[in-house]
Length: 49
Image (cartoon, one colour):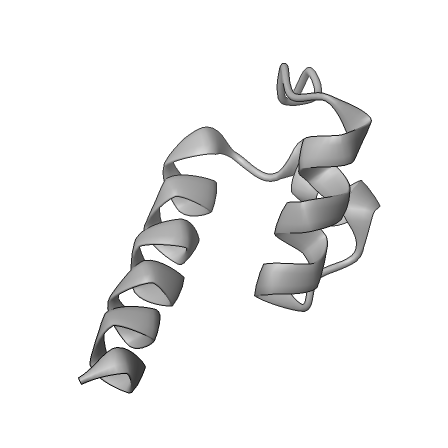
């Protein structure tokens, strides 16, 4: 599996948001990464309300 085409800075931000090591972010399948990002965004929306 090839690494995700994202920059190191983006990977650092995502790893902090998702509490996942950068290596895992870089090699995580895109559909799973998108699912986790959606979950985080939904949680942040609920926290704002």
